[in-house]
Length: 269
Image (cartoon, helix red, strand yellow):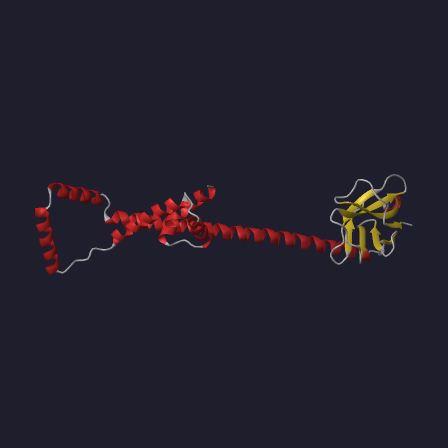
């Protein structure tokens, strides 16, 4: 029923042949299955449009033909019953209520309204598509900018003289080692290649293991499609208070404390 209410705006444009696109296809589909709402609505619109025939300009007949027609009409009127003549007068009076200029204005308004609604719908669809593309472009730009900043930070950490490097060795066979670089002023960089893919409900989590106390989370990460990992973080604890770095497999979203034995461990000597 809601579809019929929306389509009712296009009945007049359809009757005028000024409709196309998805609205035309939907109206024709409704008519094909005998929709009890759209079928009479379109029929009424077609009846109004049919009156456009009254808009044809008056043509002046030849004088001889006009004289013969008037003579014949006079003869018929003289022999016709009074009731017929009265009925004709009533019909003429009704017809005079709708002069040709009124039909012209109604038809023009009908056509303009139908066309305007159709154009507005098309512009709305185009605007929605442009806004969607703009949002996607802004998101892509933000992601590229964030990745560029991470690479710049990584290069600065690698180039700094006071950066300390360590290797996190795997506890499982055939796992690649993970390289870490920690600068006390710039932060921590972690890189790896050929990392195994993670199930969708799991993630990897990097931990700082202090000399005293419970492990502290640095962040969660997942390898990309090629098994590459690069993570830049700013640890809260000073390097001098950390005994080791460790990576464990955790549920998606990460954990407050490790829920499994770390798969990679690297002592910070």
